Image (cartoon, rainbow over all chains, first blue to last red; front, side, top):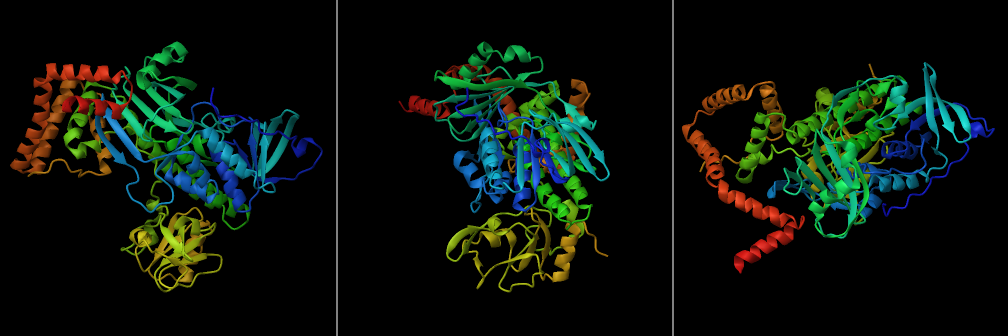
Length: 531
Length: 104
């Protein structure tokens, strides 16, 4: 059993069932996993109320997400829980790849300094959820957390959505303007709406186990193709906090899931990896995966995020991290919409960007799967050629695919007509890059300075005019922020102004910003097209 | 010195590998070998530099020869490593013990 202590989250009779009359609410989020919680906290930090419904009352059990990528950590940091996650988590940035017992090569996922957040932190999903729940409780006026509230029916009408919610005290109807389904890979909202979830199912089976033991294994991602200690095609080892290790073993297509789960079969497999040292098995299961997504993530007033919208294989850590980015891409837009500051079109931007991102994740996941499971003699031979060449010839290492690890995708294709200055190192559509700065003699981080709204960051000595409602920041001589270490200039150049969306994406770059251009860019983002 | 090791495809490497497997999909092994043969000839012509082609041939053959010639020894070495790996994943320890054996 895990050392982690599961506490039951308090259930309270909802006001709808205790005589209190509540009118129509703005937003209901279904599923208090990492995605639903991130969204609800992000909304609350923007002053927007939401109801967060979950059928359960404990955090995640089992071998779930562990690898949180830099961008997710930056999002958590914006929401006030990033530092806590890094402190508890196991920080890593090196991935090491073996073929049999020969190390082919290793690569550094964040070879440069000057970022607040590391490339990756391994942290069990139950900790992530626990920290997010605690943060959510900082917003008692805005964030209504309802555990043991199970959505059993959904009716969508033009004016709103009615959810039928089952609790220990009975069933009630909840009327809302928008529903966000964050209810995971087996989303009940998705099935109640009869939406098809299209993609590719794989019959390859994997054994996944979390074990606790005393060992000084390095904080690295280690991946073996055709390992000597396991008769399957691949093995993956990750270190987690509390002396817990994640082991993922490829079993093949013929493996019998029920048999492989049995403890007497699992123990020798683990023993072959960890040797004679004693270990405790926390969780063990056999899984297969699919790469699928909904055709559209916005279905009228019902919006999908995370695994409910798209699923991939675990190799690449693109599931949880993709979902956290969904939440971030949705929160500021939904906030603007319910505050009456945005046009309805704004949700179609979410749909376009996140289906594009999901396709990139799915593409990468399919390629990794193809490399991990050669389907023919030719594919096996081609892969062997890659392994053989990779020892001496670095180009071949680039072809070895044990997972292309999650990084935020470029949205530059959505900004083709932006016409930014050619010398800008970063284009519209890219996510902000962090940099250490100095403010009043103290070291601060660029991402922490961007704030919650649109922000115009100028790297130069002359501050530009900034329209009302936009946060203006200047990095340069005589200004509040100094780039003493030169990271900001190296990443953003000089004499340029960058307009950031509230989700820290660049949406325009100017050499000489004029307030009307800035306002026009913001109007576009908010889905309020100007003539 | 001809540099065959540098990565020239960058992020397109995955696109190429996917396209390559796609081209072979559904082919028998001899059909695949024939496709690869045509591909080699096309790429050789495109490179158009005999010195580079000879260096590439040498690099590809060297690995091939090593594998065939060294197979009994390699197998023994492999068995030895296999035995060592029973002690688990102590890569550091294993490397250390191997070094120790060499120096002692």
